[in-house]
Image (cartoon, rainbow, N blue to C red; front, top):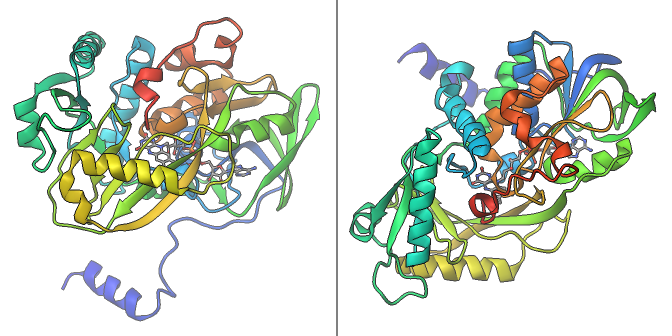
Length: 415
Ligand code: FAD
């Protein structure tokens, strides 16, 4: 038996009492050079890149609950970079490329599985749209191709490719580099690496307000006391508008519930991620064998973070339509997160109306795939005060100047 196995057994049998902590649990200092609000993937990645790329280590991540307990730990783990406009394609592909080496960079297994992302094509109109998209992506240096119905049937045994369903399968758009990544591992990997660079990660610390002077936030008020700060980074997803309100400005963001669910585990049979644009329902199989399923977001505004039966019914009926064999499966768990929807389904990155406050939000139903880029770009803004060229199109000012980056088609369904 090697050392690791002996150590694992010893830790397990001794009640994990001497298990080394992956990151510290410090009390907040009275002052930091920068504080990051939100201990989701984007906030933790921001802290990591601030320390690694910019040498800023007197920083803290303030999380009201536990790290990764927001959307980062609630999402369906799908990643891809097949966004339409050149500025989005560049940014999302930058994220996917960072993900491709992230396990090594963080020395943490994020369980990257580039098993391929398939968007089904149900009719001639979608076929033409998908061809157009594949050409655009290829021109932007991103992979994407069309596969015909026979190939789809080979790739996904069990998928109903007959002419009977409401939305018959004519083919699919395939991004081979798309796939899944273990979501908690992304949060934990960034947290451990940031902690080792000196970042304080402070959980159970809710931000409740700001002290302002001359258009700057000079301190954040929290449930663990007042913390003075030089700069503020905001990465709180569905709670962005609340933080903006505390700082005295408004964001064009609405908050909605997005739900997902998993079945009991079965033997591996689905080694791609598949989505039907007809129903908005998408499915992947976890390493444990569970079928992860999700669908459209709830259209009413909410901070409730709770699911409901009509959505479960819609998702399940569409999943059974795609894979009739699923009618034998039992549903095991169901949950929801609060997502931050912007008017053009693109993120908001960079400077806010408060001179030392920078924001990362608006990822809506699809920000897990973007975590490395979101963190990298927010860190750049905080450290330099400037917008990185990859974030140029995504500033808050685009709503004032009418320069929207409308990615509704790429992001409108559940990611
Ligand atoms: P979060 O992970 O939500 O982190 C924000 C943190 O801020 C939270 O932990 C919260 O507790 C904290 N916070 C809030 N207010 C305060 C405060 N006042 N003080 C301190 N802390 C505060 N994306 C994909 O790319 N692929 C998918 O397959 C996918 N599926 C999804 C499925 C579901 C069901 C959901 C809900 C989302 C899905 N997403 C997906 C979207 C993705 O999860 C999010 O866009 C992404 O995780 C956002 O990360 P974040 O770090 O910005 O936010």
